[in-house]
Length: 249
Ligand code: FES
Image 1 (cartoon, helix red, strand yellow):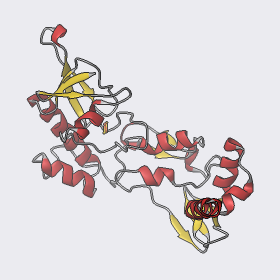
Image 2 (cartoon, protein in one colour):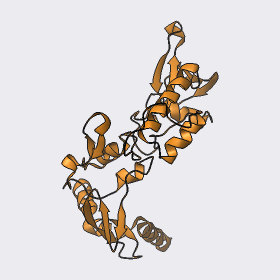
Image 3 (cartoon, helix red, strand yellow):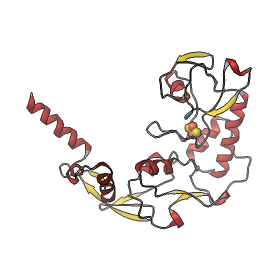
Image 4 (cartoon, helix red, strand yellow):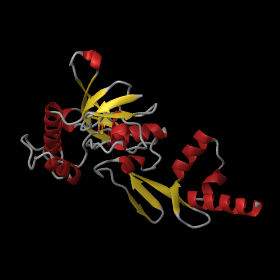
């Protein structure tokens, strides 16, 4: 499959997005909610590009490049006037929502925006409402958090802001958060996240913290792996396998 990005003909493989192909060709497209190891869902819209085809008679449409497939014959423009205007508006709005968030400030600055032209949110936090945390929680099979409330009050939380039994304390939500809004603490073998405490398990071999007990139970149920498998960390598992191969030489 061949597509054209900013006048450059580039081949793409099955399953690649426009963003994947652009990255490979060193064509810069800004992203905020894209993480290569999660399924892209077009949350922040900053990666928007214009697409057209020869058969479209000059008609163009705006799509988010992180989750639009890189199809054969597609003609993509990453920096048109329309796209730059859209990104500026998005960043202006994001800056009103998260005026103190370094990731947002930096990107806005790159587009010439120092301060928002909208009214800043009262009591702002760092959440850009991209929904990546909710997607990560869904992917892990916990479904413990979601978007709650509406309008200016909209936020990501557990139902009724209460500790949720569905949460396994895996912290995937915090790991994927592009602005580091979701925080957790670890102290004396306990991880605190989403208003709950989760006992942590340690590797029986090296003592490194592995996962929470609730996370282990969840994975055991989903994967049918035995509790023994979770007694060691990934590194010690690898070491053990390497040692076995060595003995088999
Ligand atoms: S990076 Fe594509 S929508 Fe956020």
